[in-house]
Image (cartoon, rainbow, N blue to C red; front, side, top):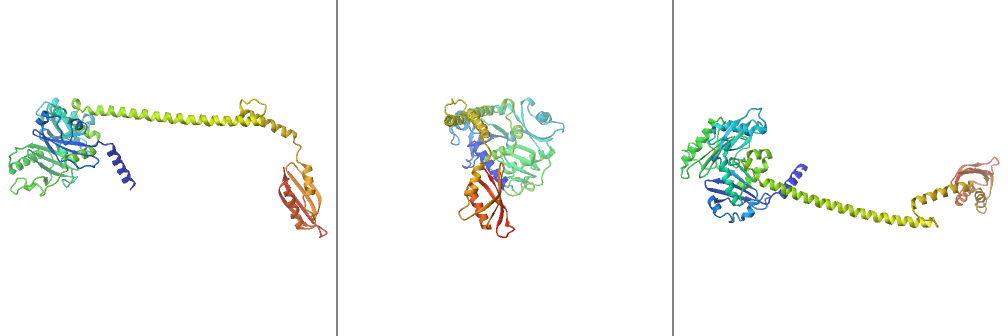
Length: 462
């Protein structure tokens, strides 16, 4: 329960510092499909809106999804690059290849398959977590990606991340695919996308365009061709594929697909969730925005964050300095009051003296008085004790003092009286004088004549 509470608090804290909106987009020929969501879940996701790219160029300042050009430029934007406009291939690298060398090694492995020079290719790759030597590689044409970024930036839609579109679909959510192993086919009006996952990791991707007017059988035949191309590349195929469109009994795909229509999350929600699932290293490897095409706003955001942190730090330092200054001022006032009190007491205790260092002067005066007290002291007040012994007993109580011993701290006496009650009366009367403390009866008993009581007492004197 404690770990669940900490997880919920961390999620709320993350949402507190997250952006208020999140924008996701995908491309079809000549069209940009956009959807908007709020990561904190306070508002529902907007429906996906299709915008012609040529209209964006003609009217870059027009509102889009209820956002002005300046407003949408500040929103995190994730764009999914169509897989039919990339070359995809599974690659197995030697175990000696390090993480920094993976991209270069993958480029060498797929160079012979590229329709353009390797120098013009942008590579995105995803290593398997259990076996990093096996990676899925996507290659896009750098000039094409660069031109699109420039076109979108003019309309305030410069994407921070550009990821392969196959990551958007078949995520195991909403019943689309079990998280371990399976195959899926995604079909829309212009493209077929096939994907195979093994152990929760992408094992193969194949995509291809179809004519808008293609019949269902032509569409299914194109999907079958893509599945066969995956098998030819060495990807192990599952027994059945899920598909997002109904399949007729006469279709070549009918024996290979599961009946039923799986659902997909809306693009913006899935995109925001995808970013939270990927580590920083995986996101850097999967994004086509690399090298000279890297998103420059990240550096500006870091600088703005550093500036905000510096301002906050200066404010905190100012608060700490102000608090310390106030504390020192209060301490100075207390010290001044204490000095005035000491000076007043010293003037009273040392009349006629000039008070310069009150504590030291009072200490010296006390030491001098102690020395005088020891010199003038003559020991115990013997006269006072003798007087107390004779005058303290009440009328009617008589006793005979036999012996008296007075030392530096104690007084001891013995005597005779008429009864045990008289012994107790004598003890109380001697104690009442205040000259003897902790007085106790050491012994009391009948004398030889059996008529008188002998006693012995001891106590402390001042």
